[in-house]
Image (cartoon, rainbow, N blue to C red; front, side, top):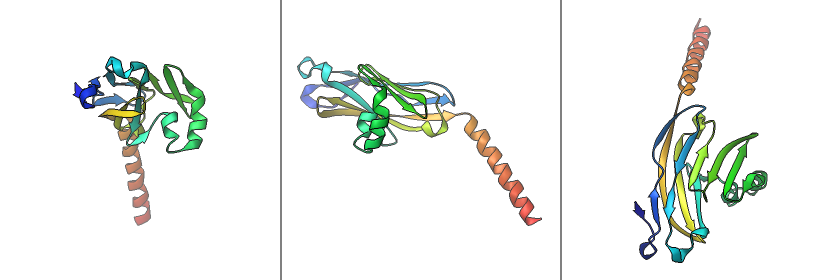
Length: 156
């Protein structure tokens, strides 16, 4: 358990954990939080970042307003869906404490951080790494072979 806010005792009881996933798989991160009664759990929101950038449309507004307008239509009370290129890529449930990544790709790898907010206060954070394994290595192998073949033709 992690204690972040001193006397208020907001706890991340189940932080995200480092995960490996095959390309095309679904990944689930959790960031369960215990909030004392006097802080009102209904004010709890867990936001997510990937490699330092907000994932959710409402948070991304601080970084890019256009993206918010495009993605905001996929948000629903209690759960949030975020669409990329016509596909529901991300799903956040239970006030953001459960976070899914659908159809994992190589560029989904990296560090995921949950940021815990109660009202307007940021009271904690925790991070985990996602390593994507699979077809990326085969693709780079073929790219390397084509480069070798190209260089061979130039020298001959």
